[in-house]
Length: 477
Ligand SMILES: [Zn+2]
Ligand SMILES: [Zn+2]
Image (cartoon, rainbow, N blue to C red; front, side):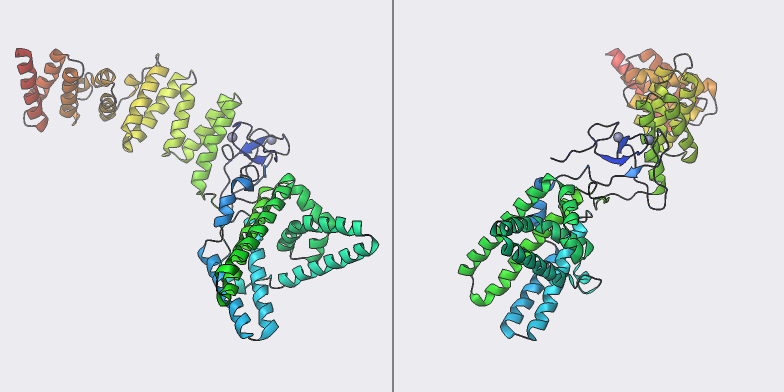
């Protein structure tokens, strides 16, 4: 049906932004919608401010969403609206209270409510209007305006009939065909002139395109269904109750049809010259926005083969958000793709500190291994001067299935810092790892004996002694 545009860098993501200068299309994947108050995003390639395309490319066509429209009226406000109108109509019918005047007020309110559905759904809001809006704002005259549209159409057809019967039928078909467009125009503009203006109606019909014909078919099916349900109920329900039930059912179908018409406009928003969002677009803070956008920018630069720009844009955000793990992660990933070993290791150490502070020990072990692999001539092991950090990373490595790497990192800790308070704990762990994971009991016993002798009153010494006993008994057996 209608052609959809996709992001230049992600072929499956619908386009939501366009650069008018270089014609590039971007999706939500690449351009994050800025929170209110921040400037519009710019094209990364040519710095031109981008034009927002709204949700046009990501809205599923209405014929795939039919159940949504049937469910649309099942909302507290709209059900209340239907119940009140049904009871009010029945009361007027039965009592004849205040006659035509009260009937006109009631029908004006109903029209106002129904037409506001088109307004809301055409802007992506799929929640029925609140009942409180019934008595406020504009739109009370919509019923009369619709009536004038009918009268003018009738007069027009009357004159056509006077000229020729064929002309009358052509006019009649055209009028029926254009009717949904006229209703939509009236709901939008509240203007009779616009609702009968052929060029305005053609703008809507051609803007929607072929889906307009599908919409007409659906509206006809819904109208027929409405009539069938009414005829069925008339035979089953007591005449006294029928008026209320009938109004309720008609009202239900009107709500379904109006939400369908509004959504069709929403679906064709780009061609109709406006932009609107789905109501469920998430709100993000300024900080989240800058971070997400930076990550997306880096990806675009990378796809364009510009590693230096990708690195520099992420680097600039590290200063701004020094504790953000996502920014560090992306910078680390980019650095692993370069040959800059020193940079990989120095950033790796800063990133590791942050990961250990936030208890991301598995991630820390991976970053350490990446640095080890990516910088063979500048070993990260030597670059980590902080003994506590060595100990923590070693523990993370052992826990994530890399005992050898962990043990290497803990080698000679007692020489590097004899006063390190965690020494007993570190060597106890190293001893256990040698024995349990590598079956190197000699090295294990050496370390465990060191703990037992050097820290005789510690809890680690007690555990080391017990472990020594276990090793010895296993060796004896
Ligand atoms: Zn551009
Ligand atoms: Zn993208």
